[in-house]
Length: 268
View 1 (cartoon, rainbow, N blue to C red):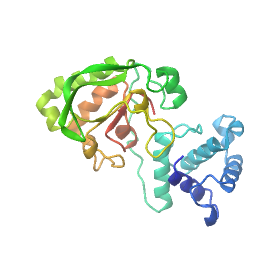
View 2: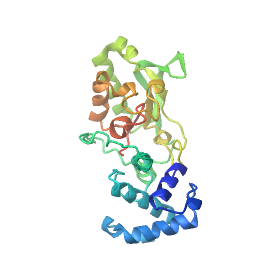
View 3: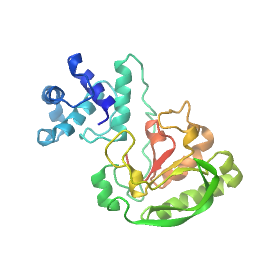
View 4: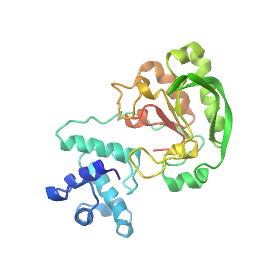
């Protein structure tokens, strides 16, 4: 759990200011247990008492979000993108800002390939160990490196289980837009694929570690930008997202309204 999220949790628990420090200290963990016992954690239907203290703390934060009217996803004690976004929303509410729910009408994309949830246990079970199962595929159109637009690549690495799907998406994009429009819309600006690393601001592995996540045009779709700033939120990109979502790929932008550059073959 990120330091900022721990501070949000500590404030939700109404801890003494001396203990609001972004650390899962003894006082915070004890307050989590007490809060869970007093606020209907039994209704989650899970045996949370047997969980490690850190997972109990995440569950506590998720339920605090729910209580404040913010959707953290499934209350399961696991830290992930949806919980992280909900924590940011709760923090904004604590500061007196009104945060609108993002796309209440947004429907979860189909999942024809049965991509797993974005959790390490599920990802390992489905894709294997991080960095395994990688193959090189030829791209339907050249991609310019976002950090060096004078360099183009004609192939990339990805996990073998997503290779055919990835190629299908990009082929459909090229057929629909044509290469000139692909360049004009910056759909050929490649921000990266396989990268064995932790999630930004977290300790768990990024989906990039399995070669199942890709970033596009990061300069115009920055991590914390919402739909008011991100170019990929505009109407001309609707078909781009339709191609991905028909194959079950998930956009953090479309689903959570941040990190619009990112798409992954893992469910939120």
